[in-house]
Image (cartoon, rainbow, N blue to C red; front, top):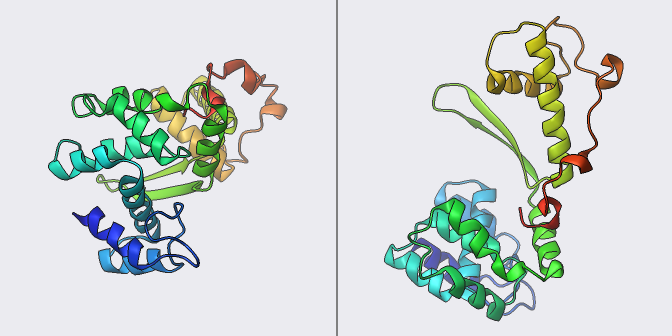
Amino acid sequence: MKHAAVAELIRRRPGPAAEPVLAAPGSWEEFTGTELSWALADTRWAAENMLDLAQTLTTKLPGTYAAFRAGVLRQSKVEIIARAVTGLDPDEARAAEALVLDRAGRLTPGGLRPRSGGRHRGRPDKAVTRREKGQQDARVERWPEHSGNAGLAGRELPPADVLAADQRISWWAKELKKAGLDGDMEQLRALAFLDIMLGRDSRTGGPGPDPAASGACLPPTESVLPAGFAGGST
């Protein structure tokens, strides 16, 4: 019902020369996201996501919208389907929706995600559009963990850069392990991540890791790209 109310807000806040609700995503009046974030006591980013999802459900995914309102689909699954139809027109989105809607409630998120993107197969232009739209939301998120620690993550980043960064983290974690630092590989990767970000060397307390200076040979990114990874399906 909250998303239904947000869709009505969009209808009442069209952007300049835009058709209410049927406008392209993000074409609502400039300060609608701010208005919604204040009304919900949430972040502007969360409000913009809700606006985008409400409009996608209203204009492209009537079956998903009905299942959401009936409680058949929880919001996390609705968001998976909505993300999968980014770049598709309403007819294509409904066709993609029809492929998964009858079993979406029974599928795990991991099972739903690849099935929802079926309409992008054979349409590289749509996959590129979807990836480019996602890159517009590139960001670094910081949040408190329930334990009292904190989390940090980059989202919607270029796949090749993410793989290269992941290689760098694994390489430095192995160097820390060789030096005898305590922890399993996951803990050492987390420490390596911080070392690289902060420019420090946890072995000595001095300047951070330098692969060139250490003689480390990192494989080229292309050699470890899984098939299709950079093609917009992630």
